[in-house]
Length: 279
Image (cartoon, rainbow, N blue to C red; front, side, top):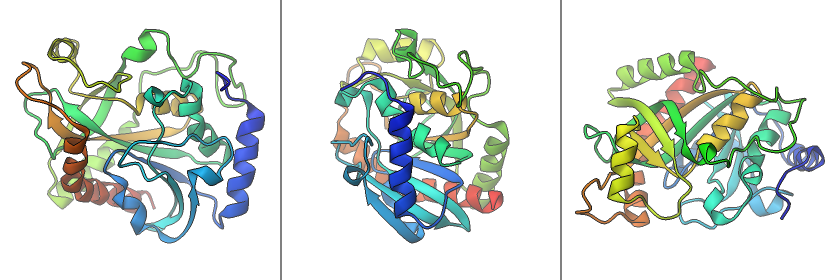
């Protein structure tokens, strides 16, 4: 598998999607582990399995259905990714973020990303939703940045600014929706680690010291590529478990999926509320 994607691959994928959908989307939504229920609420959808889409990375992880759902949600034309591929599955990092490039090429202006994450902040409880205010790209600091390699000048500059990766206007809208709906909306910093092993207690204590409130294995590369292309981003983490800072408990993927049953309705309410205000 080639390390870098090409504009030709992006164009071929866009052509296939455009042949298969009736409406060009304006908002992209990426749903993480156990959070795929929102896709079922899209009105009159056109649905594509990832396997049907050329060059599209597929996920082998339970809780990621692997479907692209295109239609209307709260009157807004959306493209919903029901699951995502991860770096730990063996893909080059440019391939993990390939769907973002396709969304940008299709004209999508806003992306809402979500994930299931471990709560490091001691105030956070399983079932809480955290709006992502910023992130720590630990994997990227080690050299695995999705913008490594040839720069796509048609998308953005070689050295993109990352001072505001998450859109502040959308954050304020999200706070309004949470207040109106009676949802406790946490806010904090998300740290990206590559996985697939969960973190050791020492690693979690380190993350807490450097300012992380939650930790997970996705999202950050997608946000970097989105911002490189000028796409606005809103991000949510569903807190699926409390971080094991002292080694007294065991973390499992089943726990993450189970938490999704509690988190799903909250996330659906927030995203629908944001879309309604945007629409």
